[in-house]
Length: 249
Picture 1 (spheres, rainbow, N blue to C red):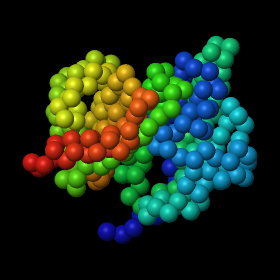
Picture 2 (cartoon, rainbow, N blue to C red):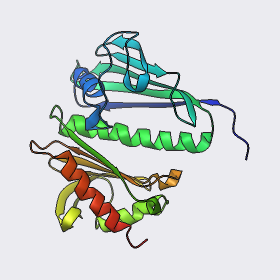
Picture 3 (cartoon, rainbow, N blue to C red):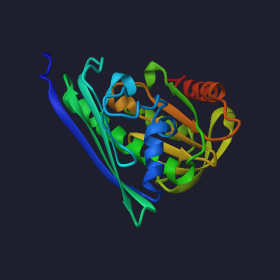
């Protein structure tokens, strides 16, 4: 199969959230681990360095931030740009956000775009969950992946079964999920579709990524806001749980 020609992409999302623009700005700049993964804050100026070797191309706190990378270092992508526009609503009590992710995919365009688009929805939902329920509490982040056998579209259904989620449990439902060691997690099922599951407990956002739809193993991220949170303990416990889910596969 021949390699595809490079092609630009653009993913645009707009949403409102019940916090002031300054809180959204602080989350985007300083608390990425609370909804995405931990990254060093960008240099606060146009031309400064940003995450993953990017360059800050717009800087207007708390209204506009853009970074762009021309050498992404990925086999299917050659350019990447993230742009945030944040505006006040209701005399500054709420915020309107426009997020644009753009760049160039060099191969496997449809699959890459589909994955990026669906992940964007989940990440931005998690950002809103953090802002609404946990900000500005500090976060302890853990991330892990399932075994190779979890790289299948059916993997997320297996995880839902292991969590003891009923098939008809929809987003917004209160659940008693079964976590590591058989521990019951009193949670809200805050996100659910064929690609992702999100649980919100009193102290954490636990996210399940059905990346088998795009040929990768299932992933879990734990955004823990408890004062005594332990990243290594969370990673170990959920890795053991995940390995057990797929041990019979």
